[in-house]
Length: 74
Image (cartoon, rainbow, N blue to C red; front, side, top):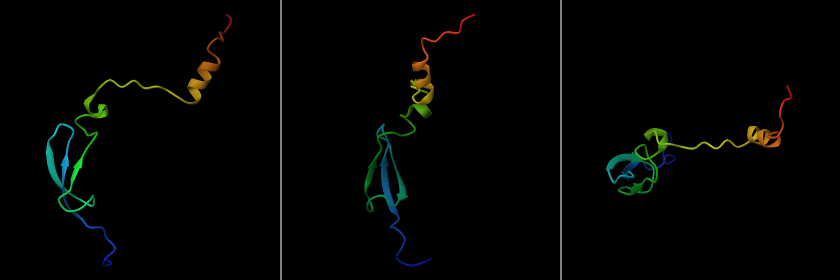
């Protein structure tokens, strides 16, 4: 390994959204810094199964809006 090209790798404290903490090693900040998370696996709907309303935007929505009054004659 080349000397003096790698970031400083040290221990920090991570604070989860519910207030629980744990120590890990990271290149974030300085030795002993605290990282406060805004979103984590305890609060994010992807992990908790919360209801998330998906709004489809893009070409399909544009098509549906454009042809919403178009009806096929039988």
